[in-house]
Length: 277
Image (cartoon, rainbow, N blue to C red; front, side, top):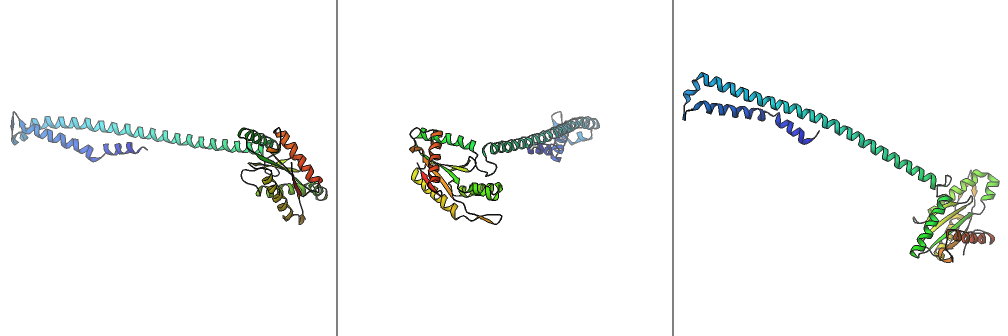
């Protein structure tokens, strides 16, 4: 209920609003009776016909005033009820709109996660990685910057799948996705790249800094104590590195080909190492 409307209603129905006009009418009537023909006399109070006439006039005026006040009160009460119903409807509609907006955001987030996230590792999937890589290449060209790409392979994942089954391999992929992600900056982007690989986009990073990061990832993986059903998983990483500045004609395809070639070199050189273009 509106505060201003409530205050008006209270003012109209207060005793002062009802009694003040009555006292005013009685005062005017009394003066009218006492002041007759240009003279003031108390004797006029005893003229019965004057009292009756003034009484009728005062009663009629006050009755009309009271009826107006009563009608105004009813109108205000009706307006208050209508205003309250309107506010309730607005509150219901506002709550409904908030609920619909929340559901829309939730659905949008779910659809975005389905489109961009790998269900096993909960990092970006390969499709979205290609989109991120294309955006980073375009940004690099536009601002003449630099960035590096890492492609990572779990060296003995195939043997784990053969020895302990694919559930063990999935466990290893999921676990090392978390281990790798924990070593990255917030600006770095990690994704699942093909079945047994990860890819990391490292913005504003040249080859030497990218190699330092890759060596840390290798060392951290080697010393990590990971167990699957009580069996220790000794995992190592092979990493290929390529900086955008090392590619003559920079495109997402040329950069990934160069990085995969570096990864192949790391594997051929005995694994558990990082090799750059």
